[in-house]
Image (cartoon, rainbow, N blue to C red; front, side):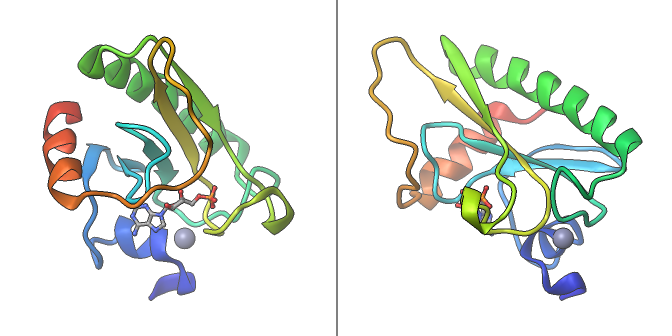
Length: 133
Ligand code: AMP
Ligand code: ZN
């Protein structure tokens, strides 16, 4: 596995993912252990460890993708809002060392603990279909 990195393997198509967006340089897919319904991860296909490490031109394009995908998720899921999370370093809870932005759709009144839940694969598959560009 390139860079010994699970997200590089997803980008290379070596392991499956529930893709919602893809272009030449970027990819977005559902988090398999979502905080909320429609929790999406957005990554550059190229490997950078974190925000301090990422090329600035790549970062600019990446955040524009985050906005585009967040808009799509908000519309498709009829969400009332969303959180963007981006963890850097183990101390901050980063478990996969390939930069990624989390998009966590939110509903009015929904109580949410930012903790991974056990993903239902059938539900994730159906959700990815709804969210796909
Ligand atoms: P972080 O804690 O910011 O590093 O977030 C990593 C996220 O990646 C977690 O929320 C995991 O549930 C998620 N994750 C790990 N492996 C996969 C995978 N193969 N497909 C989708 N999401 C994954
Ligand atoms: Zn990687």
